[in-house]
Image (cartoon, rainbow, N blue to C red):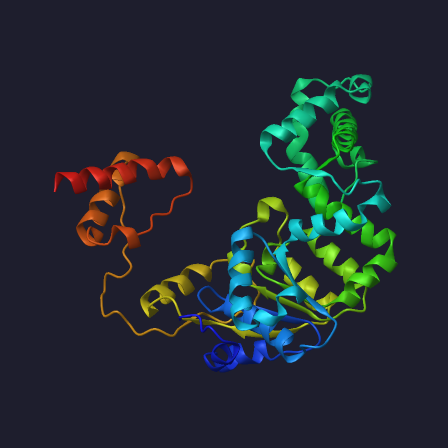
Length: 386
Protein backbone atom coordinates (compact mmCIF):
# COMPACT_ATOMS: atom_id res chain seq x y z
CA UNK A 1 0.00 0.00 0.00
CA UNK A 2 1.29 3.46 -0.88
CA UNK A 3 1.96 5.81 2.01
CA UNK A 4 -0.52 8.75 2.04
CA UNK A 5 1.19 12.12 2.42
CA UNK A 6 -1.29 13.64 4.87
CA UNK A 7 -2.63 12.54 8.23
CA UNK A 8 -6.18 12.67 6.95
CA UNK A 9 -5.22 10.49 4.00
CA UNK A 10 -3.38 8.04 6.24
CA UNK A 11 -6.33 7.69 8.62
CA UNK A 12 -8.70 7.17 5.69
CA UNK A 13 -6.54 4.39 4.23
CA UNK A 14 -6.53 2.23 7.37
CA UNK A 15 -8.46 -0.98 7.86
CA UNK A 16 -10.86 -1.18 10.81
CA UNK A 17 -8.40 -3.04 13.03
CA UNK A 18 -5.53 -0.72 12.06
CA UNK A 19 -7.71 2.28 12.86
CA UNK A 20 -8.58 0.76 16.24
CA UNK A 21 -4.87 0.64 17.14
CA UNK A 22 -4.17 4.13 15.80
CA UNK A 23 -7.09 5.63 17.73
CA UNK A 24 -5.91 4.10 21.01
CA UNK A 25 -5.24 6.94 23.43
CA UNK A 26 -4.21 6.21 27.04
CA UNK A 27 -3.07 3.01 28.68
CA UNK A 28 -0.75 0.30 27.43
CA UNK A 29 -1.45 -1.49 24.17
CA UNK A 30 0.32 -4.46 22.57
CA UNK A 31 -0.24 -4.64 18.81
CA UNK A 32 0.48 -8.15 17.52
CA UNK A 33 1.17 -7.35 13.87
CA UNK A 34 2.25 -10.01 11.41
CA UNK A 35 4.60 -9.43 8.46
CA UNK A 36 3.26 -7.13 5.77
CA UNK A 37 0.42 -5.96 8.02
CA UNK A 38 1.28 -2.25 7.91
CA UNK A 39 2.72 -2.07 11.42
CA UNK A 40 4.99 0.88 10.60
CA UNK A 41 1.98 2.71 9.19
CA UNK A 42 0.05 2.00 12.39
CA UNK A 43 2.87 3.26 14.60
CA UNK A 44 3.67 6.40 12.62
CA UNK A 45 0.04 7.35 12.05
CA UNK A 46 -0.72 7.04 15.75
CA UNK A 47 2.25 9.23 16.67
CA UNK A 48 1.26 11.84 14.07
CA UNK A 49 -2.32 11.79 15.37
CA UNK A 50 -1.26 12.22 19.00
CA UNK A 51 0.89 15.22 18.14
CA UNK A 52 -1.54 16.83 15.71
CA UNK A 53 -4.62 16.53 17.93
CA UNK A 54 -2.81 18.12 20.88
CA UNK A 55 -0.86 20.87 19.12
CA UNK A 56 -0.67 23.12 22.19
CA UNK A 57 -0.02 20.39 24.77
CA UNK A 58 3.44 20.44 26.42
CA UNK A 59 4.13 16.70 26.19
CA UNK A 60 6.52 14.96 23.79
CA UNK A 61 6.38 11.49 22.22
CA UNK A 62 9.22 8.99 22.54
CA UNK A 63 9.49 6.50 19.66
CA UNK A 64 12.10 3.75 19.91
CA UNK A 65 13.25 1.24 17.33
CA UNK A 66 16.32 -0.87 16.58
CA UNK A 67 18.05 0.62 13.54
CA UNK A 68 18.84 4.12 12.37
CA UNK A 69 17.32 3.28 9.00
CA UNK A 70 13.99 2.32 10.58
CA UNK A 71 14.08 5.50 12.68
CA UNK A 72 14.74 7.65 9.61
CA UNK A 73 11.87 6.03 7.71
CA UNK A 74 9.47 6.55 10.60
CA UNK A 75 10.61 10.14 11.07
CA UNK A 76 10.03 10.91 7.40
CA UNK A 77 6.49 9.53 7.49
CA UNK A 78 5.58 11.39 10.68
CA UNK A 79 6.99 14.69 9.44
CA UNK A 80 4.91 14.43 6.28
CA UNK A 81 1.74 13.86 8.31
CA UNK A 82 2.43 16.29 11.17
CA UNK A 83 5.23 18.67 10.09
CA UNK A 84 4.33 21.21 12.74
CA UNK A 85 5.05 18.74 15.55
CA UNK A 86 8.59 17.66 14.61
CA UNK A 87 10.13 19.40 17.64
CA UNK A 88 7.91 17.41 20.01
CA UNK A 89 9.19 14.03 18.91
CA UNK A 90 12.24 11.97 19.83
CA UNK A 91 12.59 9.08 17.45
CA UNK A 92 15.64 6.85 17.38
CA UNK A 93 17.21 3.65 18.60
CA UNK A 94 17.38 2.62 22.25
CA UNK A 95 21.07 3.46 22.09
CA UNK A 96 20.50 6.92 20.62
CA UNK A 97 17.96 7.73 23.33
CA UNK A 98 20.28 6.40 26.03
CA UNK A 99 23.19 8.46 24.69
CA UNK A 100 20.98 11.56 24.74
CA UNK A 101 19.97 10.94 28.37
CA UNK A 102 23.56 10.34 29.48
CA UNK A 103 24.89 13.42 27.69
CA UNK A 104 22.45 15.48 29.75
CA UNK A 105 22.57 13.65 33.08
CA UNK A 106 25.47 11.17 33.02
CA UNK A 107 27.43 13.26 35.49
CA UNK A 108 25.21 11.84 38.25
CA UNK A 109 26.96 8.51 37.62
CA UNK A 110 30.40 10.03 37.15
CA UNK A 111 30.11 9.89 33.34
CA UNK A 112 31.45 12.95 31.55
CA UNK A 113 28.82 14.31 29.20
CA UNK A 114 31.28 14.61 26.28
CA UNK A 115 31.97 10.85 26.24
CA UNK A 116 32.77 9.01 23.02
CA UNK A 117 30.95 5.87 21.88
CA UNK A 118 33.13 2.89 20.98
CA UNK A 119 31.15 0.62 18.70
CA UNK A 120 33.75 -0.97 16.41
CA UNK A 121 35.39 -4.30 17.12
CA UNK A 122 38.82 -2.69 16.86
CA UNK A 123 38.07 0.03 19.43
CA UNK A 124 36.62 -2.44 21.91
CA UNK A 125 39.49 -4.88 21.45
CA UNK A 126 41.91 -2.07 22.21
CA UNK A 127 40.01 -1.24 25.41
CA UNK A 128 40.12 -4.92 26.31
CA UNK A 129 43.89 -4.93 25.82
CA UNK A 130 44.23 -1.86 28.03
CA UNK A 131 42.15 -3.61 30.70
CA UNK A 132 44.45 -6.64 30.62
CA UNK A 133 47.55 -4.44 30.79
CA UNK A 134 46.21 -2.26 33.62
CA UNK A 135 47.42 -2.60 37.20
CA UNK A 136 44.17 -4.36 38.18
CA UNK A 137 44.51 -6.69 35.20
CA UNK A 138 48.08 -7.59 36.06
CA UNK A 139 47.17 -8.18 39.70
CA UNK A 140 44.40 -10.55 38.60
CA UNK A 141 46.79 -12.39 36.30
CA UNK A 142 44.86 -11.53 33.15
CA UNK A 143 46.45 -12.60 29.89
CA UNK A 144 45.87 -11.85 26.21
CA UNK A 145 43.34 -14.65 25.71
CA UNK A 146 41.05 -13.05 28.26
CA UNK A 147 40.14 -10.52 25.57
CA UNK A 148 37.72 -13.23 24.41
CA UNK A 149 35.59 -12.24 27.43
CA UNK A 150 34.22 -9.23 25.51
CA UNK A 151 31.06 -10.98 24.25
CA UNK A 152 30.38 -12.12 27.82
CA UNK A 153 30.63 -8.51 28.99
CA UNK A 154 27.97 -7.59 26.40
CA UNK A 155 25.70 -10.39 27.57
CA UNK A 156 26.13 -9.38 31.21
CA UNK A 157 25.19 -5.77 30.49
CA UNK A 158 22.22 -6.82 28.35
CA UNK A 159 21.02 -8.73 31.44
CA UNK A 160 21.85 -5.82 33.79
CA UNK A 161 24.51 -7.82 35.61
CA UNK A 162 27.29 -5.59 37.05
CA UNK A 163 30.87 -6.72 37.38
CA UNK A 164 30.82 -6.95 41.18
CA UNK A 165 29.84 -10.47 42.19
CA UNK A 166 29.46 -11.80 38.64
CA UNK A 167 32.00 -14.56 39.39
CA UNK A 168 29.37 -16.40 41.44
CA UNK A 169 27.39 -17.06 38.24
CA UNK A 170 30.13 -19.29 36.79
CA UNK A 171 30.46 -23.03 37.36
CA UNK A 172 34.22 -22.63 37.35
CA UNK A 173 35.32 -20.43 40.24
CA UNK A 174 38.64 -19.71 38.54
CA UNK A 175 37.09 -18.64 35.23
CA UNK A 176 34.48 -16.59 37.08
CA UNK A 177 37.16 -14.73 39.03
CA UNK A 178 39.09 -13.98 35.84
CA UNK A 179 35.96 -12.70 34.11
CA UNK A 180 34.96 -10.52 37.03
CA UNK A 181 38.43 -8.97 37.06
CA UNK A 182 38.37 -8.42 33.29
CA UNK A 183 34.86 -6.94 33.36
CA UNK A 184 35.78 -4.46 36.10
CA UNK A 185 39.07 -3.54 34.43
CA UNK A 186 37.32 -3.14 31.05
CA UNK A 187 34.77 -0.70 32.50
CA UNK A 188 37.57 1.19 34.23
CA UNK A 189 39.49 1.42 30.94
CA UNK A 190 36.36 2.75 29.20
CA UNK A 191 35.99 5.37 31.91
CA UNK A 192 39.65 6.39 31.61
CA UNK A 193 39.17 6.81 27.85
CA UNK A 194 35.99 8.84 28.47
CA UNK A 195 34.07 6.30 26.39
CA UNK A 196 31.09 3.97 26.54
CA UNK A 197 30.24 0.98 24.37
CA UNK A 198 26.73 0.28 23.07
CA UNK A 199 25.63 -1.99 25.90
CA UNK A 200 26.97 0.46 28.50
CA UNK A 201 24.61 3.14 27.19
CA UNK A 202 21.37 1.34 28.07
CA UNK A 203 22.91 -0.26 31.17
CA UNK A 204 23.80 3.15 32.61
CA UNK A 205 20.48 4.79 31.78
CA UNK A 206 18.78 1.99 33.71
CA UNK A 207 21.12 2.67 36.66
CA UNK A 208 20.40 6.38 36.37
CA UNK A 209 16.62 5.99 36.47
CA UNK A 210 16.73 3.52 39.37
CA UNK A 211 19.19 5.53 41.49
CA UNK A 212 17.55 8.88 40.75
CA UNK A 213 13.77 8.31 40.56
CA UNK A 214 13.16 12.07 40.36
CA UNK A 215 14.94 12.03 37.01
CA UNK A 216 12.77 9.15 35.83
CA UNK A 217 9.69 11.15 36.90
CA UNK A 218 10.91 14.08 34.86
CA UNK A 219 11.27 11.94 31.74
CA UNK A 220 7.85 10.34 32.06
CA UNK A 221 6.27 13.76 32.53
CA UNK A 222 7.96 15.06 29.38
CA UNK A 223 7.39 11.92 27.28
CA UNK A 224 3.76 11.22 28.04
CA UNK A 225 3.56 8.62 25.28
CA UNK A 226 6.16 5.96 24.53
CA UNK A 227 5.95 3.92 21.31
CA UNK A 228 8.20 0.92 20.67
CA UNK A 229 8.69 -0.71 17.28
CA UNK A 230 9.77 -4.37 16.95
CA UNK A 231 9.15 -4.82 20.66
CA UNK A 232 9.81 -8.57 20.43
CA UNK A 233 13.52 -7.77 19.98
CA UNK A 234 13.97 -5.90 23.26
CA UNK A 235 16.45 -7.41 25.66
CA UNK A 236 16.14 -7.31 29.45
CA UNK A 237 18.15 -4.07 29.84
CA UNK A 238 16.02 -2.22 27.30
CA UNK A 239 12.76 -3.46 28.77
CA UNK A 240 13.75 -2.74 32.37
CA UNK A 241 14.88 0.74 31.36
CA UNK A 242 11.41 1.45 29.97
CA UNK A 243 9.88 0.08 33.18
CA UNK A 244 12.19 2.21 35.30
CA UNK A 245 11.27 5.33 33.37
CA UNK A 246 7.57 4.45 33.59
CA UNK A 247 7.96 4.03 37.34
CA UNK A 248 4.69 2.13 37.75
CA UNK A 249 2.79 5.33 36.89
CA UNK A 250 3.14 5.79 33.14
CA UNK A 251 0.92 3.33 31.29
CA UNK A 252 0.93 4.98 27.89
CA UNK A 253 3.32 2.49 26.31
CA UNK A 254 2.36 1.39 22.81
CA UNK A 255 4.29 -1.67 21.61
CA UNK A 256 4.18 -3.20 18.14
CA UNK A 257 5.47 -6.75 18.06
CA UNK A 258 5.45 -10.14 16.38
CA UNK A 259 6.96 -13.02 18.32
CA UNK A 260 7.33 -14.94 15.05
CA UNK A 261 9.92 -12.40 13.89
CA UNK A 262 12.43 -12.34 16.76
CA UNK A 263 15.91 -11.76 15.28
CA UNK A 264 17.88 -10.50 18.30
CA UNK A 265 17.79 -13.63 20.49
CA UNK A 266 21.60 -13.56 20.45
CA UNK A 267 21.33 -10.24 22.30
CA UNK A 268 18.80 -11.36 24.89
CA UNK A 269 15.46 -10.98 23.06
CA UNK A 270 12.86 -13.41 24.43
CA UNK A 271 9.30 -14.17 23.31
CA UNK A 272 8.24 -14.23 26.98
CA UNK A 273 8.85 -10.48 27.15
CA UNK A 274 5.49 -9.95 25.44
CA UNK A 275 3.77 -11.73 28.34
CA UNK A 276 5.81 -9.68 30.83
CA UNK A 277 4.69 -6.49 29.11
CA UNK A 278 1.03 -7.53 29.24
CA UNK A 279 1.33 -8.27 32.96
CA UNK A 280 3.58 -5.38 34.02
CA UNK A 281 1.70 -2.69 32.11
CA UNK A 282 -1.78 -4.29 32.17
CA UNK A 283 -1.76 -3.96 28.41
CA UNK A 284 -4.67 -4.53 26.07
CA UNK A 285 -4.05 -6.52 22.89
CA UNK A 286 -4.98 -5.80 19.29
CA UNK A 287 -4.14 -8.32 16.60
CA UNK A 288 -3.44 -7.25 13.00
CA UNK A 289 -3.15 -10.53 11.06
CA UNK A 290 -3.92 -9.23 7.55
CA UNK A 291 -0.96 -9.40 5.17
CA UNK A 292 -1.11 -6.75 2.44
CA UNK A 293 2.19 -7.67 0.82
CA UNK A 294 2.06 -11.29 -0.34
CA UNK A 295 -0.32 -13.37 -2.47
CA UNK A 296 -2.37 -16.02 -0.63
CA UNK A 297 -0.14 -18.84 -1.87
CA UNK A 298 2.81 -17.34 0.03
CA UNK A 299 0.69 -16.58 3.11
CA UNK A 300 -0.59 -20.15 3.22
CA UNK A 301 2.97 -21.50 3.16
CA UNK A 302 3.99 -19.04 5.88
CA UNK A 303 1.11 -20.14 8.13
CA UNK A 304 2.02 -23.81 7.69
CA UNK A 305 5.66 -23.12 8.46
CA UNK A 306 5.22 -20.82 11.45
CA UNK A 307 2.75 -23.22 13.07
CA UNK A 308 5.83 -25.26 14.04
CA UNK A 309 7.18 -22.40 16.16
CA UNK A 310 6.57 -23.76 19.64
CA UNK A 311 7.55 -20.47 21.27
CA UNK A 312 4.86 -18.32 19.65
CA UNK A 313 1.98 -16.83 21.63
CA UNK A 314 -0.94 -19.31 21.65
CA UNK A 315 -3.46 -16.52 21.07
CA UNK A 316 -1.89 -15.57 17.72
CA UNK A 317 -4.25 -15.86 14.78
CA UNK A 318 -3.03 -17.10 11.36
CA UNK A 319 -2.09 -14.56 8.71
CA UNK A 320 -4.82 -13.56 6.27
CA UNK A 321 -3.95 -12.53 2.71
CA UNK A 322 -5.46 -9.31 1.40
CA UNK A 323 -4.11 -9.65 -2.12
CA UNK A 324 -5.75 -11.81 -4.72
CA UNK A 325 -4.24 -15.06 -5.92
CA UNK A 326 -1.65 -14.88 -8.69
CA UNK A 327 -3.22 -17.89 -10.33
CA UNK A 328 0.25 -19.39 -10.68
CA UNK A 329 0.76 -22.80 -9.06
CA UNK A 330 4.53 -22.19 -9.02
CA UNK A 331 4.51 -18.96 -7.03
CA UNK A 332 6.18 -21.01 -4.28
CA UNK A 333 8.63 -23.73 -5.30
CA UNK A 334 10.92 -25.97 -3.27
CA UNK A 335 14.12 -26.98 -5.06
CA UNK A 336 16.53 -29.65 -3.81
CA UNK A 337 20.18 -30.10 -4.80
CA UNK A 338 22.80 -32.74 -4.12
CA UNK A 339 25.77 -30.47 -3.46
CA UNK A 340 26.50 -26.84 -2.62
CA UNK A 341 27.90 -26.36 -6.15
CA UNK A 342 24.72 -27.79 -7.68
CA UNK A 343 22.66 -25.49 -5.50
CA UNK A 344 24.65 -22.42 -6.54
CA UNK A 345 24.36 -23.24 -10.23
CA UNK A 346 20.72 -24.33 -9.97
CA UNK A 347 19.56 -21.16 -8.21
CA UNK A 348 21.46 -18.96 -10.65
CA UNK A 349 19.93 -20.77 -13.62
CA UNK A 350 16.44 -20.68 -12.08
CA UNK A 351 16.64 -16.93 -11.54
CA UNK A 352 18.00 -16.33 -15.03
CA UNK A 353 15.27 -18.49 -16.55
CA UNK A 354 12.33 -17.01 -14.62
CA UNK A 355 13.52 -13.56 -13.57
CA UNK A 356 16.22 -12.70 -16.08
CA UNK A 357 14.37 -9.57 -17.18
CA UNK A 358 13.76 -8.36 -13.60
CA UNK A 359 17.01 -8.94 -11.71
CA UNK A 360 16.72 -5.58 -9.93
CA UNK A 361 13.48 -6.79 -8.30
CA UNK A 362 14.89 -10.19 -7.29
CA UNK A 363 16.24 -11.00 -3.83
CA UNK A 364 18.36 -13.96 -2.76
CA UNK A 365 18.60 -14.73 0.97
CA UNK A 366 21.07 -17.05 2.66
CA UNK A 367 22.20 -17.94 6.17
CA UNK A 368 25.71 -16.56 5.64
CA UNK A 369 27.22 -14.07 3.19
CA UNK A 370 29.71 -16.54 1.67
CA UNK A 371 26.85 -18.52 0.10
CA UNK A 372 25.62 -15.51 -1.87
CA UNK A 373 28.68 -14.50 -3.90
CA UNK A 374 28.80 -17.64 -6.11
CA UNK A 375 25.10 -17.28 -6.93
CA UNK A 376 25.57 -13.65 -7.96
CA UNK A 377 28.57 -14.58 -10.09
CA UNK A 378 26.58 -17.39 -11.70
CA UNK A 379 23.75 -15.04 -12.60
CA UNK A 380 26.17 -12.54 -14.16
CA UNK A 381 27.94 -15.26 -16.14
CA UNK A 382 24.64 -16.66 -17.43
CA UNK A 383 23.48 -13.17 -18.39
CA UNK A 384 26.70 -12.48 -20.30
CA UNK A 385 26.53 -15.86 -22.00
CA UNK A 386 22.98 -15.29 -23.21
